[in-house]
Amino acid sequence: MRVDAEPAGGSLLEERTARRTLRDETLLVLALSLGASGVSALISFVGSVTKPGGLKDQAATLNASAAPGRPWLDLAWQLFGIATALVPVALVAHLLLRERQSLRTLGFDRTRPWPDLGRGAVIAAVIGSTGIAFYLAARGLGFNLTVVPEALPDVWWKYPVLVLSAVQNAVLEEVIVVGYLLRRLGQLGWSPGAALIGSAVLRGSYHLYQGIGGFLGNMAMGLVFVLLYRRWGRVGPLVVAHSLLDIGAFVGYALLAGKVDWLPTA
Image (cartoon, rainbow, N blue to C red; front, side):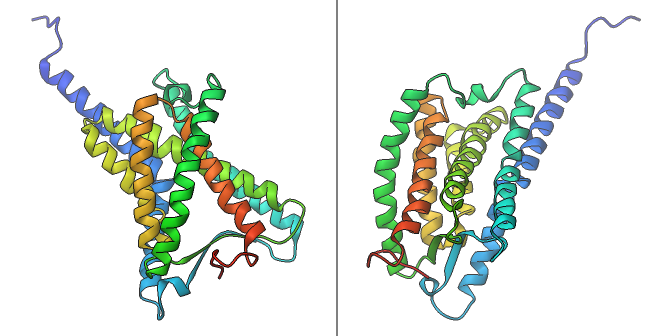
């Protein structure tokens, strides 16, 4: 007897296999990037809260020297770290190509540079001022470590590396935690609300090394960023905003630390 049609069970099995593949792919991308950072931040936070003394008496340093006293070797390590941190973004681009899509699908391209820059600048201005106030309040209440955005030596490449580090953070986080993750969670059947919370909690988790304030502040930022992404359909403005926020934090700290009374230093 000849069977011309595929049994219904076959298509159901293929659907389950496809969903399992997407789930495993998503978990692997996160395990290679910001999911692993979330686990690392949790371990660091546990170490901080179990250490004698308050959180604000401890410091979390973001951009530190990798080879003190050896500036050229230090520069090589800094550039290596920035480049390798972007490998998960390249992996996401490759995985999207297998769907006959690209990073343009997530709105990460150069097709709308001026709207992206304008929107990003406005977001950065609003969130930046709010974020500084929230950080100072959280630290004052003992919920946050003292964040030291940079501790690089005073060499010629200091500021270019800080800018590159800021842009790297922005590209990695917005492409993966917003664009890619929301796409995959939607394909896996998550509701919009659950995907919104999942993305925001992930963003907060890998900032937990800064303390409860870092977790809550970045989770709130994640909620805003997801809502804006859904409105505009582009991660471009979010990458611009995040870049400007981190450049302001890194370069601003380098210029102002020890010169103004309101900025805490380690």
